[in-house]
Image 1 (cartoon, rainbow, N blue to C red):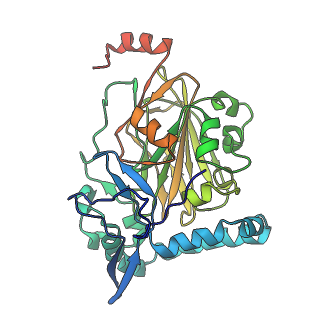
Image 2 (cartoon, rainbow, N blue to C red):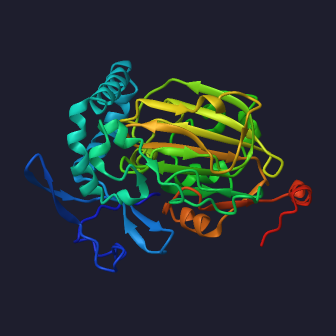
Image 3 (cartoon, helix red, strand yellow):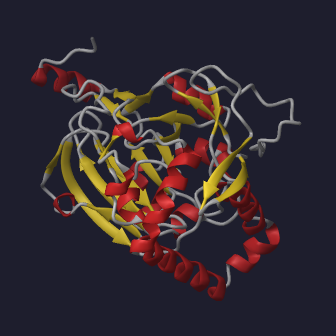
Length: 364
């Protein structure tokens, strides 16, 4: 059972958390918003930063954590099943999206960057005054070269699809025991397709969770051919671990788009982009909605607009070996903080040998 860990200094059981300079990471700090100083206590989840191997605390304001605890408990989970509550959440997400697209929303950008300590040198434009609205800032692009693609020309290497926190499991059933607790979660329910779903039912699955401060463009994990596309309307629930640990079937009820990518090395790969609260739009680019079009590993596949969000990437059984550091952390219900283009895993199986011979690739 997931142990909900809050960032209070009194809890000595938590691992020490340090910033990039090796200094103790503060549990609270002051942000200036509209000329006023606001004290923010951070109560985010413990993650492992892949670049350093250190335990880090995900930055999340106290008010947001309290909101999640109020929303996802037995009473409100029951209320959440009512039609009225679902209509309210849907309306709230749409209204927030309109607000983020207004010219006045650009005044929030500096406070947002300061609170989440976003390194704007990784993005273009890097000057926050260049963004006309908060929505424009939210879908900001990386500078070329800031996220190199691991073994870009090796088709047997799969890569991380988003700046995010990732967990990965060798079977969907394992993910349900540790990470996703909704009653009805399955790949078949996720894609609403009784023919496609069973193809991935017993296979490995990776879940990528994006927070509001993250880069919200997502990229292909593999090279191949678009085989299928589908867009499904739905709700906009939070994808925080508190929500995923509840009995509300978040992932199978939220708005989502998916593509199936056909490859020689991995077989068919399912990529599902899932909206969340504060996300009014899940948008896979038009060229990747057309079956038969080619996509290369690391290509930008689509965009989330305004908010946190989630991605599920599922593989057929026996076709990928996820990287050991991600698997080890996931078994302890700890997500790994990763960036686009890092290694996710490698292809396995008899067909990989044939593919390597065709492309003259090796593991080195």
